Image (tube, rainbow over all chains, first blue to last red; front, side, top):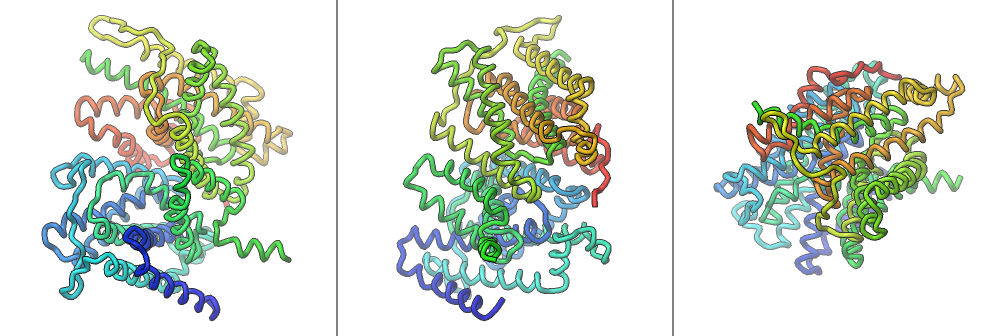
Length: 309
Length: 292
C-alpha cells in the first residue's frame, strides 16, 4: 500500500468514526451492523478469495457465534470470555466440516456448507429448550468493558468499530506472513504451489476454519448489537448475501469485503423506495455486475487502466 | 410392513421429481461446467407460467404445460445460456455461481412482488383417489409421477445413448476439445443441453406443484435436493442422478415417519456427507482425473 492510499484509508476511517454522533438510532445501528458484518465477510474472503473455495455456510457460523453469546451471557459469563469460546467453537466445527469436504475439490465445499447451514437452522429452530426455537432469544445483555457497561448505541458502535479494525489488522498481518502468502499461491496456481511443498488440503482447511472463526466473532458482536436473535437471520439466504458481499466487492482483495458489505447492506436501504421490488432489482443487479465486472467492484480501477492504454 | 411399503412408494415418487431436477443439473455441469444455483427457481418459474396460462388464458392443463415448456426453453434455456452463461464461462466457476445466485434471488423476488407471496393451488395432472393393492394403498398421483418421471428418464437415456445427436452431446461432455476436432458442433450441443434442462425443470414443476403448491420460494428445497441427489448418485453420471434422487426421497420419507419430522430436511445432507467421505465420486460415478 502506498502513502496516498494510506492517507485515504485513515481519512475514511476517521470519517466513519466521526459520523455516528450526528445520526439517529437507526443510522448508528446500520453503521454498527456494517462493522459486524464486515468481520464475518473478511473471514469469508479468506476462504473464497485467498483459498479459492466456495462457502455458503458463513451465516451458520455467524449464528453459532451469536447463540454462544446469547446463551452464555444470559448465564452470566462476561462478553470477553464468551468471544474466544465462540471463535474457538466455530474454528473446531470448521475443521470438522471442512475435512470431508476438502478431500474433493471445488463445488463440494459449497454444497457441504450449504447443507451444514440448513442443519444448523433446523437445530436452532427445533431444539427449543436451549435455543428458544422460532421465538428466538431476547434480552441479551450488552458487553461491559473494564467494569463499564456499553449500553449506549454510540458506545457500542465504537467498541465494534475498534474490534473490526483489530480483526482487520490481524488478518492483514496473517496474509503478509509467509504462512499467509501460501494462500495466495494456492489460489493462483494450486498445482504449482503443491509442487513447491505447500500442503494444499491443510492450508485450505485452515483458511476455512479461520474464516469460520471470524464469522463466530462477527456473530458474537451481532447478538450483542441487536440483543434479540432468532433462527431465520442465520439461514441460507443470509449466507448467500455474505458470499455476494465478498464477490461483489472483489474476492481476494483485502478491501473487497469492505466495498461489498457497503453494497449489500446499504444498497437495499437505498432501494427501499422500490418496496417489494427491491430484492428483485438487487438480484438482477448482481447478475449484471458479474457479467460486466466478474472481478467485482474493486477491479474497476484495473479495468479503467486497461482501457485507457 | 404395509406402512413401510407405502412410505417407500411415495418417497420414490417425490424422489423421482428430485431426480428430474438433478438430471438437468448434471447435464449442464457435464456439457458446460455450469453449476446452476438457480435450478430450484428453474422449477418454480414454469409452475407459475403454467398457472398464468391456466388462469389468465384459460388453457387446459396439457396446453398450459406445453406452452410453459416453450417459455422455459426460450427463457431458461436459450436466454439463460446466451445472457448469463456464455459471457461468464470464460471467467471461471465462481463468477458464474454468484450470477446464478443473483438470478435465484431476482427470480424469486420478481414472482413474490409481481404475482403473489401466497401459495397458489395447482391442479394435478393425475386423477384423485387411492389404488388398493392388497393392504397397500397408493395414490394415483404417486404412481403417475413415478411412471412419467421414469418414462422421461428412459427416453433421455435412449436419446443420449442411441441417437447421433445424443452421442455427440456425450462426446462434448467428456472432452470438448476432441469433440470439436471430430467436427461436432459444440455450441449447438451445449445449447441442446440447456434446452433439455429447461424441459426437465418444467416436467418437475408439473409433477411437484400439485403437492407442494406454487410458491415463490418452492424452488429452495427442490434445488438443494437436486444438488445432493446429483452428487450422491455421481456428478458425471446421468443414471446417478436418478438413483440419488430416489434415495433422497425415500430416506426423507422414512426419516419423517419413523424418527423426527423436524429433521427430515437434514437427511440429504447426512447421506451426502457419508457419500463424499467414502465415495467422493458418487455411488455410480467414475473418478475424474485431475486436469492440469
